Image (cartoon, rainbow, N blue to C red):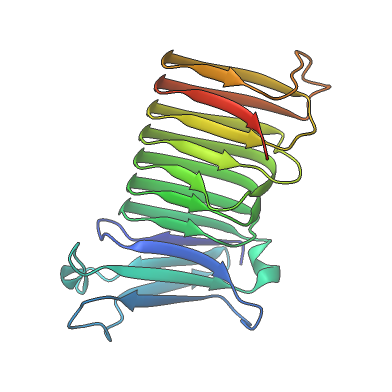
Length: 226
């Protein structure tokens, strides 16, 4: 298995990605709140040699509405998680990434993306919602995040990814980097203020990371991790 895709479609539900040392194989658990059919299991899991896809059975999705919150918990064995690409797709809902992965891809229409853990590569596309780190995250290769309406506030631990590319149309963009640098930084905003408080260089070969941060309407801050 190389990948897991969790696609909730139009059903508003949270997606939580975790690891469990006791787990021998990946599993997807559905927990419903305030539903008269809380014991029902509308999850469909399809697996082939390339990976696994988790979706919600359309026949059962009628009782999954905004008044009946729920959560899909994707549980991975730690060793497997570090080799996997996990993709979360949803029109509405929160993504809570709390695992060490190879790659994380999140595509959300309305809802926050909350990050912790580690990955080689992270790619986030949001429309209405923030992108934030609960704890400083470890990303080695690349981190990209876009949102149309919402703040982006991410902290990187240990060593920054080689490339960081973050942008918001309407929201603040705040990036905290490890103290050691220097960094190539391109930070700009059309309506707001810009502050860069990390060691800088113009030479990409000497840089610990190349950071691009943009906002159309909001402040942009590149700071060291404190």
